[in-house]
Image 1 (cartoon, rainbow, N blue to C red):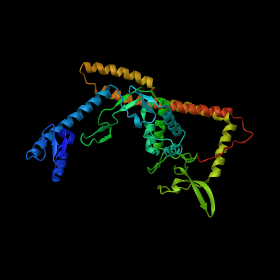
Image 2: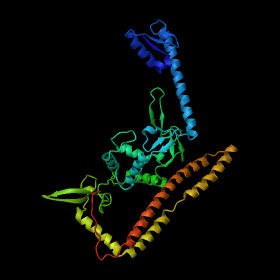
Image 3: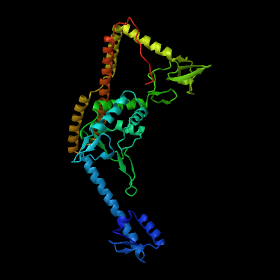
Image 4: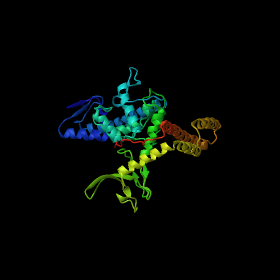
Amino acid sequence: MIITKSISRFARNTLDCLKYIRELKDKNIPVYFEKESINTMDAKGEVLLTIMASLAQQESQSLSQNVKLGLQYRYQQGQVQVNHNRFLGYTKDADGHLIVDPEQAEIVKRICREYLEGFSMDKIAAGLEADGILTGAGKAKWHTSTVSKILRNEKYIGDALLQKTYTTDFLTKKRIKNNGTVPQYYVEGDHEAIIPKDIFLLVQEELARRRAVHMSNNGKRRAYSCKHCFAQMVFCGDCGEFFRRVHWNNRGCKSVVWRCVSRLENTGHVCRARTVNEEYLQEVVIQAINQVLCKKDDFLKALQTNIATVIKQGDTLSPEVIDERLRELQKELLKKANQKDDYDAIADEILRLRDMRKQAEVDSVVRDEQMRLIRDLQDFIRQQPTPSRTLTRRWSSA
């Protein structure tokens, strides 16, 4: 005999309850429910069991709904719940608040730094494995999906997006990604940040850039590559495709060359671009750099003109201007709501401005980073003496 406290403890729904009880009865094993005083071997046991199991299912559904409402309330109050046991970079203090784990935080910083330096997710994962670093779950194997989640996780800047997933069925407990089906809540400054916000925004911009490195005329996307310093930098003047690095064996003569993708794949274009030897490509780049250094005053003047033109063309509303407009619209919205007027148009405008503000913040950080790189380039060029000697460098596949 199996003795259990109640039907709700035995099974969560009527179908499962009856299924398992009948299987046990076939083996001549009775089940006794203490709370309901039901023995499955009694003649009336199954009838009572069907009714009671149905009630237990409704109770389970009601409990699930209450839990959902409780979670919704906590989300609205900005209360963040995170399983820190599998969360790289953080642990919890005695009060249950997230605090930074210094050793693990360095791993998170390393991942972001290497990604911005041009490493692919595969290379980052391979480097972490080679150094014997464990994942947040304590595993030795690093997957690119793990690296990707770390790069995209807003919790590393001290914020938290709540209800990224939700439960679709209270019986199966299946959870799926929330694509707007249920509300999401964004909490700012919930805990100490590991990654500065401007660095995080640069990572998001780089993620977006690598998703669309190049779109061919035939609609095919070209994937990001970090295997060589010329990767995604040499374009075909005939068809607009990338040049790809190829190890060539031409009549027994081995060499490394760069060829247009249209000559390596069936892209729908008949390309007549010549094959370029890598040594010749390196020599041309060195000559171009030396030409800039020899005429650096002219180059810097042209660079300043181009910068001014780009800034003028790309001038958009600043986050501060958008914030001021949002405050005005929010006051107008409250006024119309109190007067019971139609405020749908104002609400739509507020949502549009919020999206604009988010993009403006990203654009501002990216623009600042681009200007910093340009200033570094200008400083480097100014510091170089007009070369009586030619500039050389060691080319690598790093």
